[in-house]
Image (cartoon, rainbow, N blue to C red; front, top):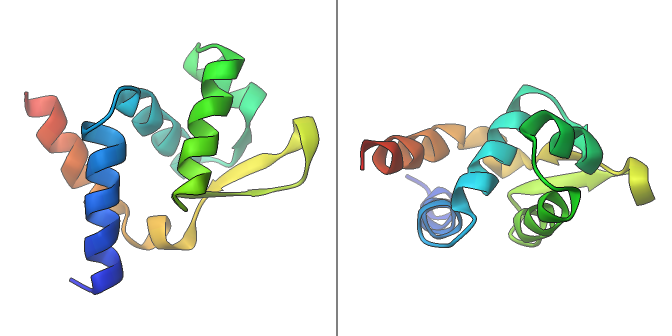
Length: 100
């Protein structure tokens, strides 16, 4: 496992399993894997409050799990290239969480 993959694994473990809101962040990552979306689309599709989605998008973007294009209300979010390349690590973490 490369150093960047190893650090991503620790980061994802913390963001998903180690903090409040991890489940919401996991749902956002899964939704963005399927199709890039804006915050309003995510809020509607995940049946969550828009402000909650915005908060988690900021956390994920700050930690380079997702990237965005566009501006304002129409900003569209995508998984970052490193997240795309290492999606299996995320799935591993999810399996461990959902076993509990």
